[in-house]
Amino acid sequence: MALEIATESPLQDDVRGLIAELNAALHELTPPEFCYHMTAEQMAGADTTVFIARDNGEAVACGALKRHGGELGEVKRMYTRPSYRGRRIGFEIVGRIEALARGEGIRRLVLETGDRHPAAWAVYERAGFSRCGPVLDYPDSEWSVFYEKILQAE
Image (cartoon, rainbow, N blue to C red; front, side):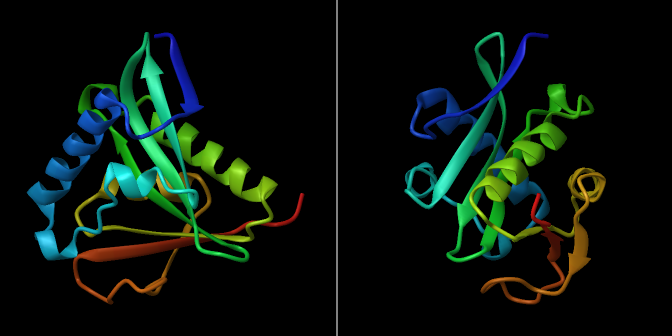
C-alpha cells in the first residue's frame, strides 16, 4: 500500500465521492436531523483544512480541522472506506489534524460523533481524546457522543 496523506481541496470529484460515501454511511446509523454534515463547499472555506489519504492515487479516507477562533478547533468529516479500515489511517489523519492545530496555537480540539460508531470512538480514544459533554452548538442528544483533547504547548 503506497498510502499518502496530504492537505487537499475537497472540491475534487473523487473527494466529493468520498464525502458522499461518508454522508450515506452516517444516514444508515443516525436520523438525518442528527447528522451534522459539512458540504464540500463548506469544507473548502478558509477556516477548514482537509486531509485526504490516498492509496496509489485513490482517495480512501478523509478528515478535517475546522477552526472556531481563538484556541478551539474541531475534528470534522472523519471517514475511511470500509476496505481500508483497521489500518490506522483514521488515527494517522487525527494525528495530522492535531499537529496542525498545535502548530497554529489551538489548545483544545473537540468533536461530535454518533452513538453507534464504536470504531470511531476507538480511534479518538487511542489518540488521547476523552468523552465530554456537548460542545459548540451541538444539542445534547442520545444520538451524539462528544470528545475533547487539551493540547499542551510543546
